[in-house]
Image (cartoon, rainbow, N blue to C red; front, side):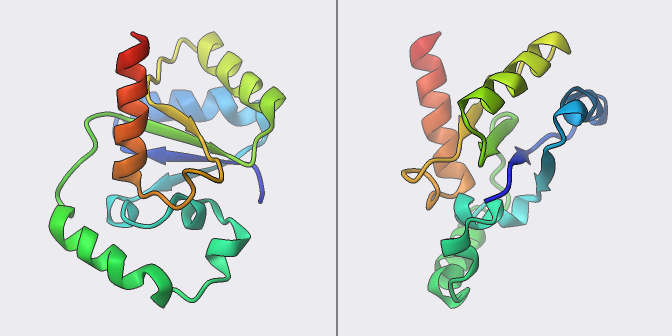
Length: 134
């Protein structure tokens, strides 16, 4: 899997541009995920081989059900998911955000445990962890 940053619900263009400029020197692929894809597995969105090579019918039905139920349900904040980054690269991303003065409270690293989750499930977990730490 290639190094990638997935962005969810970054609607403020000024913040998004500031984020892109901060991460530019790291040469990471940055992918904005549209709301209609929030029901797809994180691994699929990040290009994880096992998810991409699977027949879409494996999860397409479930995705459509989720999308019909919550198509208009937005996340309650911005979320950034780091995929394919090792520990040093994650640290570089966090330093770049700090240096740019960007606070993104809902950040996650794609793991084998969460790569099958959709955006709403991952956001709920990250938000709960963030609130427990704060």
